[in-house]
Structure formats: structure tokens, C-alpha cells
Image (tube, rainbow, N blue to C red; front, side):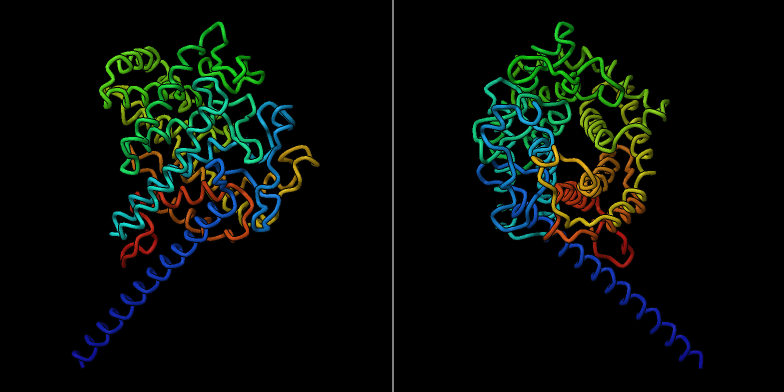
Length: 441
């Protein structure tokens, strides 16, 4: 009788083990299929091979016509409807390209770790080079050295709106820096990437002065009228942006053996390093500011600080940066469930209304457009705190649920970029793996 009981317990145990294993495998298979669908949407619906750029939203899902709504040469020349090109479908190409380039770097690491075939890895490298080429275009199209254009329309090659922002510059610079350091780049693209970083840093040195109200200026040399290109005398969550630009340029110059540029960027970086790190840390004592910050601002602050954490030579400043990273990650965790709820309550297949008729990205569709992006932004913000490992089981659970919601074959929001970016980042951090004891990882 005792032997039969022991055998029965053993049978039940084995049944549970194999059931959990099959459940984990099934979950991972579903995630893999969803990821494949998301990547297909990125390339087939939002990307233009003419510009190597990704666009903000879709007014049509008809094959071959998903980007027909983008501005014409006449509209860009007339700065219609706004010098930033707001609401035209190409105001955030620098941000989007940065998100996708980082996602490809993470995807390469994930596939390499899973022993993918060499042709798979080479395909990712090719894609990354194309995306980098698009970001490079944004820094040259205006003819104004170091200016980061928001986007270029496939209908208006060689043209751009004159106004950029620190948000666009932040994502572009940090992604290009990550690409320069990654195995996806080669000698030729690393050289080009270095020139991009130097050009942006040099523009900051020339233009971010008290006389210009610390503005890096529009492509025509005028000052930004709405303050979004100011790089100093800014709010706490914006303070680390300029510091990160100089630090990234210094890192590349140092590792490239360019001693003249290394010395220049070191000087610029260290002149503001302590003040901007301390200012960024003010956010810890200012929860009201945190409550007012949109999720995209959290992400840009966090990614700037994460870059500085990697490079900061002074231990006390490094510790301050690490504490701020942890605080920001923990603060934004409180938004996860509400963002997920909004994602569930919107029809993500709704196409955008004509921006020419409604006056931009306005009305009810704007929330439909933003809710998948916000879920991805929150996850990326938490994951950026590699100093403290803030991305945890609850973060993975919410991201997994959010990632599985959209029908990516019909999604019309660029939020797909942030979701796929967060998914690949989480995979690289060790989550979403098959394993009996990691059903949620």
C-alpha cells in the first residue's frame, strides 16, 4: 500500500511538472508568434524603404497605401500645419527610429544567445544598418550641421520641417551610440555613426548659449518658439539630456583614438555633469512633478541617466544616478495597470482620421494611438534601470498581457514600436524564457 501511494504521488508530481512545462512552452510559442506579427507590421505598414524611416500612424491599412497620407513637398515648404509638422504622421521619426534600432540591438543579442542561424543574425544586422541610415538622414537632410530633423516624407525627399526638439535628439543620439557600440555595426557604419554623434554634440556647443536662451536652434537658424529645443535651464526630468549627448560623444571619441575631440567633449561634459546629475535627483523629492510628467518624459529621462550611469567616473555621482534611476522606475510602476486597462478598452485597429481634415492627431483617436505606446514606454522606463534590476515579475506580467492584446496585422499606432522594443528588452534581461520554474519569465 505504501509503495502504491508513493508511486501515486510520483505520478501526480510528474504530471504537474510536464503540465507546467507544456504551459510555459505554449506561452512562449504564443509570445514568439505575436512578436513575429509585430515585427511584420513594423516593416510592412510603418516603414518606408525610400527614407529608411518609420511613421507615426496609419490612415489606411490597404497594402501599398499605408503611408499615402504623409506631407507633400508643398506642405513641408509651407510648414503646414506647423513648423514641427505636428500631427502629419512624421513628427516622431527620430524617436521611432531610435526605439526600433535599440530593439534590433536587443533582438540580435536574444537570437545570438538562442543560437540562431547565421543568416538570421545577418538579416538583423542589415535591418539595423537601414534604420541607422534613416537616422543619419535626419541629421543631414536640413543642411544645418547637427540638426536632427523630425522626419522626411517619402513624397518630399530632401525636405524637412524646420523645428525639432530635445526629445527627438535624445532618442536618436542614444540609439546611435548604442549602435556604434554593438556588434551590429561595422567599420564603415561606426565611422558614420561617430560623425552623427560629433555633429550633434558640436551643434550643442555652438548654439546652447545664454544668448540663444540655451536653444540648439531650428534648421534655419531661428530660435524655437515653444521652448522644446532648449537644452539647459530646463526642468529636472530634462536636465540630463545635454550631459548624455556630450558623454556619448566623448565615449566614442575616446574609443576611436580621437584625442582632440575626446578632450573637447570631456570638458563640455564635466562642466555640467555634477549640476545636471544633482538637478535630476531633485525629482526624488518632488512627487508632484512626477505626477505631471507624461510617460514619454520618464523614458527619455531614464535612458539619459542610464547612459550616464554607464560612463560616470565619479563614484558619488554614479551612486546618485543609480538612486534616481531606481526612484523613477518605481514611480512609473504605479501607472502600469491603468495603462493596461486603457489598452484593453480601445479598438487598436481604428484607422486615424485624415489629419488634413481634423487638424492633426486630435480627437478620440489620439488616445487610441497613444495607449499602446504608453504601455511600451512604461516597460522600457522600468527596464532602463539596469543599475538596480527594477524590471521584476510584475512588470513582466503586465508587459506580457499588454503585448498579447493588439492585432498587429491591423494596428494603426506607432505604439507597436514601443511594445516590440519593450518585449525584446525584457527578453534580453532574461524574461519570457521557457522553463519549469520561469513560467512568467
